[in-house]
Amino acid sequence: MSENNEKPKLENTEQSLISHLLEVRNRLLHIVVAVLVIFLGLFSFAEELYGWLADPLLRYLPENSTMIATQVASPFLAPFKLSIVLAIFVAIPYILYQIWAFIAPGLYKHEQKMFLPLLVSSSLLFYLGAAFAYYVIFPLVFQFFTSINLEGVTQMTDISEYLDFVLKMFMAFGVSFEVPVAIVLLTKMGALDANTLGEKRPYVIVGSFVVGMLITPPDIISQVLLAVPVWLLFELGVIVAKAIDKKDLEDV
Image: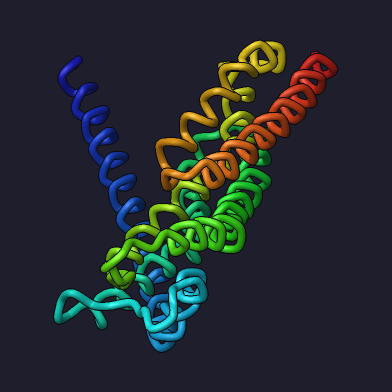
């Protein structure tokens, strides 16, 4: 009798696992198709996009200096890689939505309501961080680097190396600007509260400058320009955490 009862349970478990795997596959296919469609649209303008990306450096290069390609395929591969990465960046809200659609059935209603504001805010903050890197950090950093002229050395940056550098900076600033979202999530999970965050403020300030030192170029300007926004975003997260704590107390 017990064996007969166990078989349906095993079958239900297997069916549930298979259905979840199929849904994961479908969600991944939707993401891949979305990224591919965006990529095909962007690749038509790959050269223009790379020119836009290289502009913060080109405007400060010394006269008669240019960017170079040290590998045969670099003039094709660099814009190709840029188009793929930009397609993923553009598709971030859709990717996050697909993740939410997969996990939403297992969430409570109040958790489902919280996801949409987090989706919008996390996407906007990531794009804001990338824009801050492009319009504020890059001009200052490249102006500083190109002002250093060594005798007998001509400044000519490889296009692939430049692409890797700026993509790393985009990712670093985009992720760093997600601090308020991380604080909100940890607060809602009960792992943090506003009082605890306030006590950790000195460590956060020091940590912001340490992170700025590690992931930005070795000049004090770019390090400060990353550390200060991260600190200010932390303060914004503290304000939101206080509002969440107050609301939770009112609900009780």
